[in-house]
Image 1 (cartoon, rainbow, N blue to C red):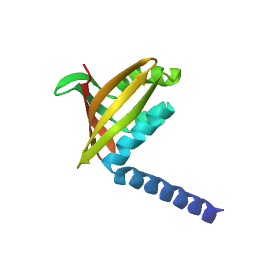
Image 2 (tube, rainbow, N blue to C red; image 1 turned 30 degrees about the vertical axis):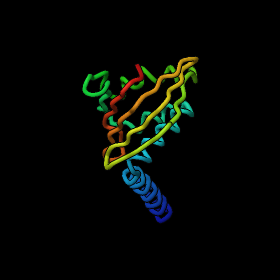
Image 3 (cartoon, rainbow, N blue to C red; image 1 turned 180 degrees about the vertical axis):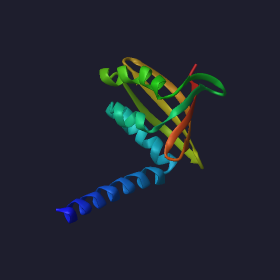
Image 4 (tube, one colour; image 1 turned 135 degrees about the vertical axis):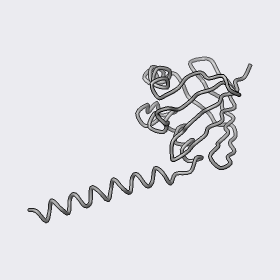
Length: 134
């Protein structure tokens, strides 16, 4: 029995280390695209995991709108539950830790165009700056 327990612990450890390594090795572009997929699937649990606990959200260039995943939860969770939002990526570019999207966000009958600048470090979104359509 002891040998089986040791083997099980070894495999669980291997799975944990592999999962953690995969998260860190994802590129910033992959992280942002996962965000978009989870957004459209209304999968809040996976969506919020992509953000740093102390993420900062701005209106471009530097007007702080909110900080932390609690802020994201208060904004997005009700919308995900209601399934009232979706995002369409019009175009995308990236350089290093930054991904810039031209997006159209639809909520109910309203569409808003954004340029969104995502900063991704260590596999998590650290900041987002939104340039909104006027």
